[in-house]
Image 1 (cartoon, rainbow, N blue to C red):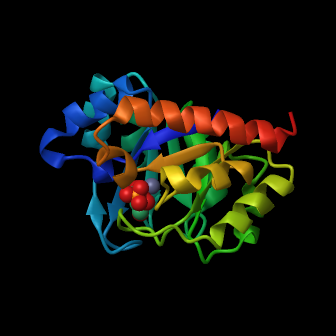
Image 2 (image 1 turned 45 degrees about the vertical axis):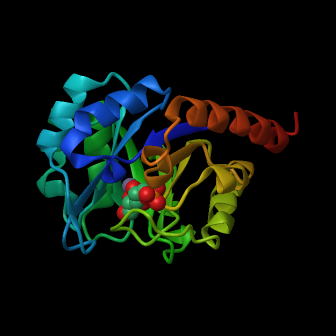
Image 3 (image 1 turned 180 degrees about the horizontal axis):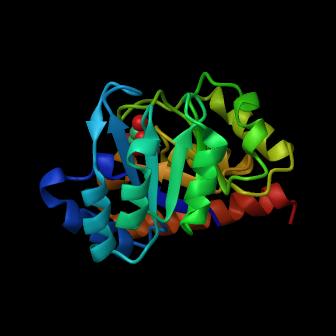
Length: 222
Ligand code: DX5
Ligand code: ZN
């Protein structure tokens, strides 16, 4: 079944605790924390202290997406604050293999992310050592954008390499396009706007999980 990971980028900042508790109670599987350094992306968001506070509030895994040019500067702080999954971008100049080792060495799952325009080849050297590949379905930096359908082929291509880890997508995911993503190999859906704007989150999450069960059955040929 697809995991649903609400992005707190779309939460009500003045009621962040209420919104994450609502998401957890609605059956969401992870909480996605978009971290931005105003350099790798033209936006600034969230800190290790946010992760520390969220860790006290919810028991579902915290999925921390580091949209940072130099994640090594804050990696220990995010890990120590309680990040359960830490994803770095394939486009950075840092020593990715070394960072992946540090993330896993701290007991967290390691992910590597690709902007929509970055080819799959950029993650090939790391596929044997990461637990998750994040195929961004929008240009990172802002929520509420339209899903870039060209990325669906990339998700399919990742799965077709035989990669067995999590394949996550992030950006523009809605109830009406999630089935297509699942049929092409997605296992984790980051959803911000579509989830936090809905009035019936428990029913929506239940439909998404049910919807995915059908799609994954089709994919698995069951
Ligand atoms: C982009 C952000 C968004 C956000 C989710 O850097 O990562 O993808 O989390 O976007 P929406 O609101 O479209 O679900
Ligand atoms: Zn993200």
